[in-house]
Image (cartoon, rainbow, N blue to C red):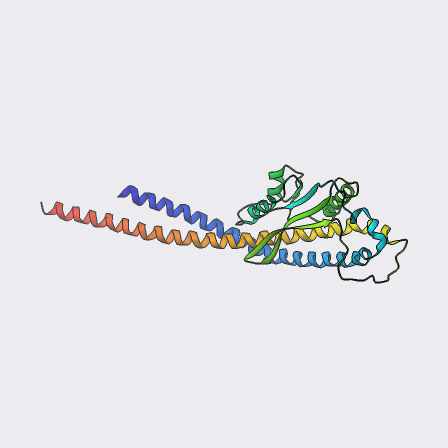
Length: 267
């Protein structure tokens, strides 16, 4: 009986330690969520701005000759895979890697420590990924696409739906597609449309990268906060159950001791 009580006491201490850890990580995630969401919304605005900027160019017939608007025909795909910098975020990282299974024989450029560790790529942290890094990466991707190395280039990221819901998805950024059901605006470009488009495409891809990384990071923080809240509730329920079992075991031990004392005094 004494051994059981000691075992229960140790289990309660262990689960209580886990509870303190989950609460601490939940508080850290809560402190980051506001900044992460602000970054996500600004990233979305920038993405929309660069998309609207190049849209009139995509409507120009001359721009159909741009290397960024035609498929190379070699069938190769490159995916920028954005995962988290750390774990304990529920199914966030697992969902990203699960979505990747649909794409076989692709070249992968990882962002986020978990993705970089998995695919042995250059270490790029999702939380600190900035525009200069995005621009450097975008230039390399655009160069490879223009030279015919890839048939299409996409970004595997996580779309933020709400604090309780995030969805892993692929956004293809190259080749560029002509907008449907829209007419040319009649804008005159200097020196010419295709030159301006080719110069603007790296900025467009960089904007897409920045937006995707910021949205993925916001999704990671939200997923971690929900995971820690759930883990904290489970740990507390476990502590309550163990405490009840401990009290019963202790009461049983006390009752047994009293019985033995009474029995001994009557002899």
